[in-house]
Image 1 (cartoon, rainbow, N blue to C red):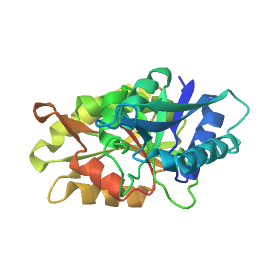
Image 2: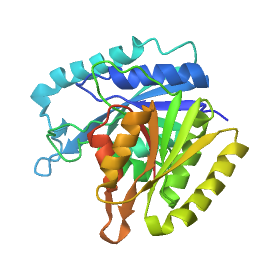
Image 3: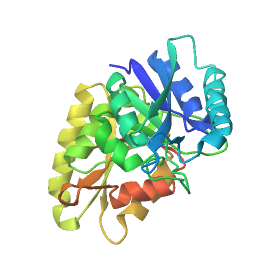
Amino acid sequence: MSYATLMVHLQIGQSNKAVLDVARSLAQTQKAAILGVAVAQKTQNLHEEDYVFFAGLIEKNLPAYQAKIAATEAEFRAADLGGGEVEWRLGETYQTITEYLAEEARGADLIIVSADQPAKSLTQADRFDLPDFVTLAGRPVLAVPNVPAITPDFSRAMVYWKDTVEIRRAVAGALPLLKQASYVSLVQTVDQANLAVERERMELVCQWFKRHGVTVEPMALESGGDDATRLRAAAAEQQPGFVVAGIYSHSRLRERVFGGVTRDMLRHADRCVLLAH
């Protein structure tokens, strides 16, 4: 089992070195094709039917914006992503960037994106929304911290386990990476009263992993206080190269948000996080 196609989202006007470094590493180990996608969001002025601007920039600024697009493509093509199939695609759309990328995910096994969200955005449509994207993509998403120099490390993994549909899907989507890891921990916070039951359930999960050729080390942490802090401390001790987690949505409000632990993990991101919904 492996990823045949990796899709990489490149942000226009920003450095994409971190996501490209990770894509290069995975393409080599997974023998995968790479699809690089950047999106120019188009909006139409409601008062002047034929007046179109891109990403909130009026037409007189289009040359500067087009130069940024060209620079993003040049960065992708210069990244030396390996000897496999590499494709560049620029999307121009009236949809939000998030919606467009989610549709493009149909042709990928894993999508690689930046974990960092832009501090400011000229328009709401121009902003890439990570939790919204994960819920729409229908594919596992690898969020990469935008640190100055990231050394991709997929030899050690930590699964933030919680017996939910979202985590089960994330684990299934992470299997190609987990099968290549030399160490995988399965970490869960549990109430003391349910410790015996949860350990039994975790053992069943460990057996499932074993049948897929993955040996995991279960770790049940007593829940109490701030679970996010406890899990972050466990990650600091184990130093995994990546973690696996799920995100959750409140369908009644049509609101897609990260759970507290996942949100905390991304806020303090110093390693890749594989997400699914």
